[in-house]
Image: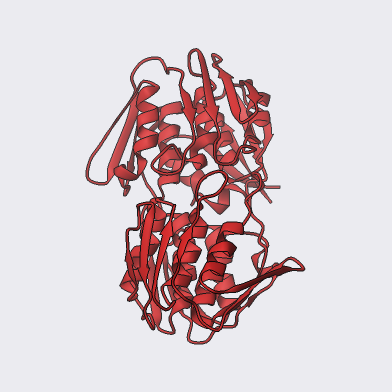
Amino acid sequence: MDKIIIHGGHPLAGSVKISGSKNSALPILAATLLTKETCVIQRVPDLSDCHYMLQILAHLGADVERASGIVTVKAEKVNCVAPYEIVRKMRASICVLGPLLGREKEATVSLPGGCVIGDRPIDLHLRGFQALGAAVRVHGGNVKVFAPSLQGATISLKGKFGTTVLGTDNIMMAAVLADGTTAIEDAACEPEVVDLANFLNKMGAKIEGAGTARIVIEGVKELHGAEHEVIADRIEAGTFLIAGAIAGKEVTINRVRPDHLSAVTDALRACNFSVYGTNGSLSICANGTTKSLDLKTQPYPGFPTDMQAQMCALLSTAAGESSVTESIFPQRFMHVSELKRMGATIELDGATAKIRGVDTLSGAPVMASDLRASAALVLAGLLAEGTTEINRVYHIDRGYEMIDEKLGELGARIERVKV
């Protein structure tokens, strides 16, 4: 097991290339199961979650090759059972249900694991499958779905805390091979959903409306192989923008889609940072005192829940009092106790973190509890006086490709050690 050690107080400057999106790559890799032909996926990030997905595909019978960020998958024959020992490490493994159901009209997948950030049920996924005509059975920790055939339907994916990204992905992948037309109402609008839809359309699917709350899918008889490049990871991009805000002179992120980051850049400008750029790059630099902010997470195009912890780290040293309300995963505040160990003044009031800015943070040994919380601790360590030791960094390796090396190239004093 590794840990990351950061010697704080060293300013960041320079540029960094953003990797392909983990949250796009995972369902796109799952979608390769929909065809017997070869698919080539480019810009797949070198992350543990992506490795797990490739292991799942191989277990299901696909031939998988990987070289320098390019993954080639040929699923000429598939089996339809993904047991617990294969899927337990990653919640996104549930997205093999949709393509297996669409292609083989049956699938058995163990309920998956992943980050502990609160209750994230898959009831909306299962409700969508049932609307397409599938029978659903949950027993012994496994989900079994099966149907003689799938029929297009109108499906609402609105849940207690909004819509579901993976649910939208799953239903879309099942519906592309259903008979007739499917309309997904209250669909997730995230760029990652659009990326998956674009890949499916390259395979011969007929999908319209991705990126809006209503996606219409006209079923086709079969799909063929295709090539596709995964979009930039907007969460990694946002994290490096905050790294530039919290400890940078001027930091530039390259190979990004600025339009995917509007909510994050708007928040950083409201905190008094200068953010600018065009043609696939964004730069950030200080513009005086960091101002406080009242922020609420929302589904896209609102401020992303996956950036909430990182923003808490930034606001912990902003002048005045800030608040961050989590409307999607109300329990997603496990980073707060660790930031407080570093000197942050944060109090939780239900789903709201009330933050009173302090002059400085101090290095301390801290524990990463989930993927985005670990990123927040890295950001805090960049600014803190002294040395910060972050344990259980396998969490960060799930979603950030070589974060220690990239920050080191920007001037951070950061090292990874084995313990």
